Image (cartoon, rainbow, N blue to C red):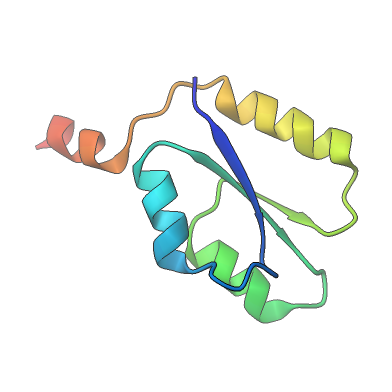
Length: 85
């Protein structure tokens, strides 16, 4: 089971490297962005978040996605690389 981080793109220190670091550690990352903010959407997509939601999404839908995504065992990228090579 994995832990989840939900982050909005209004967070001033958010970067692709930060998201990548969380994912490397095995966290599920949920991104939330304003529907009209194309750069925010691009940041989250390029950072390979696990799930995207626009601001105003039903909180229960977000919670269900977190539940579903965290129930699946995850390996960090470093563990995946060592197993494949």
